[in-house]
Amino acid sequence: MTKVAILTGAGKGMGGATARELAARGWKVALLSPSGGAETLAKELGGVGVTGSVTEEADLKRLVDAAMNTWGRIDGAVLSTGHPPKGDLLALTDEDWRKGLDLIILNVVKVARLVTPIFEKQGGGAIVNISTFAAFEPDPAFPISCTLRAGLASFAKLYADQYAAKNIRMNNLLPGFIDSLPEKPQFKARIPMGRYGTVEEIAKTAAFLISEDAGYITGQNIRVDGGITRSV
Image (cartoon, rainbow, N blue to C red; front, side):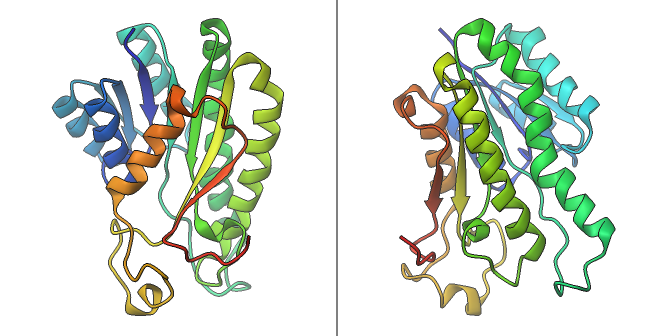
């Protein structure tokens, strides 16, 4: 049986690399990005692409509908987004924080509302949220991101607990500094492995977490960070 995944933030970077990895493993992919890159990549991978924003429920529904209309099922979702505003903690505006909430937490809530009934009818499914290493070790370089992704961890655990008995899983993948962004010496110096991670390494982890090989993993926050986080 062919597996189908929907992916957001999938025009490039970690989302795009995950789309390539899943397609290479035989998955069918439906991709969303705001730039049009998802449509281009989808054509290359034999999938379907939608141009839209993760903050707009109508665009997320178009993505889900595109997958269902094309293949009649959805087995998993890999949710990646852009970066929320950065800056000094108290200089960030209320609008900056609201934008972060839409981008980091509410997009996951909206997708979960759309795909969970589909998963229930099919007897299972999995969601992987691409988060950040700073969710549990707050970093002043990313104040909105780390604050709200800690909240995303709580949502994922609540969701995972509620739907685990129905074979529906949700996990967060926590990347460190990845080569989808320009390398900065001050960040690289903090990484025990001495290098940025690659988008392919994130993609392989996401592909594992969405697969049946990770069938007993749910509600977890998986660090893929080269050892940068210190807590145990």
